[in-house]
Length: 457
Image (cartoon, rainbow, N blue to C red; front, top):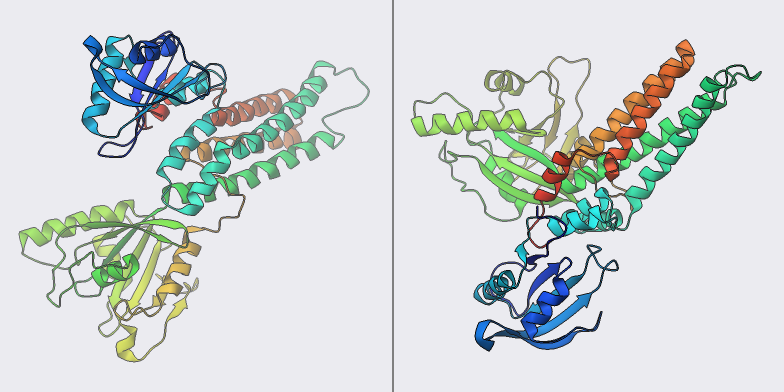
């Protein structure tokens, strides 16, 4: 990314034709560059100014509104100017080239948000929430991203940090003043405080898991023998004819992906080739791709024809030998309408070997699909509350490491009364939490995070 002393510029609206196109400027020369562009001496802060945008030789490139936000009271904390002209790739590209001649440099992906983070306008969680709000695939995900952007997740993390700091002060005091008559490590107060922090971390973890599911969803692979109804199930869940359905075995030769929502949970559905022995080279490649998809699935929907049932467990082990258990398998007994049966969910039986959860449906007649959606959400552990905030894998990783260090601190306190070792575990727990908001975050991680943002944000 460019040095903070430079002024950056980028198109902030999507590519293509539109009524309005926006270009952003941020940096120490943002105002002077904008004034040169519109041939004015200055701009009134936070007022929309109608102006012409000039190229060289007084040629008018476009006409629109100019808004000036002086730092530090701007999104990035620097001087920011927004040019609102007409949408269209050529018009915006011409303006961007002119701004380059006047002294601006092209912004990298996420550079505006990175500058806001560097200038203390946002913490890392809030910066990430901007990208998550833009990318939200459901209303629930957008609401959760907005809560994170408004600081709710950061506030929860800061509360945990303050409790940890307070706890560390007591532990350090007990270590530094061993001659005191009161043994702080054995009077129960520090243990009670530590256990309270552990409970709070678990509560935040629970909300973060729901937020990660809202953001990322789950990968669901539909597999089974040919003509079991896999493509019909995909079409029924997607609500449209996405996959070709015929009575000819082997119709599906490649993997087919479709993203849908079920009750707010984002599912990436993957339809696969029917698993069977075949000499057809194209179908063999489809089966190999199906096997690769099974390896990365969060949930496997094994579809079988109830009128011609197969040995689901045996077939899964044959085509997916890496499968250690059936915890992430849901057996779909399809075509229940042909046997006159209603939808039914049967949980796995712990006492039965190779038992897996089963559900009766009819993909063609839309029988049992609501029940299936409910079961999928339950299997994913998806039950977001109104106060759920958006979260990412790195947040969960940091919380898990924090929980691990707190558990070690508890062991050092209760099992060994080792104050020094407990203090070190608490320090590591605090550092893990601080990574969430960016207080302790490596530069390469910051580059990776902001590099995933769109240009102009």
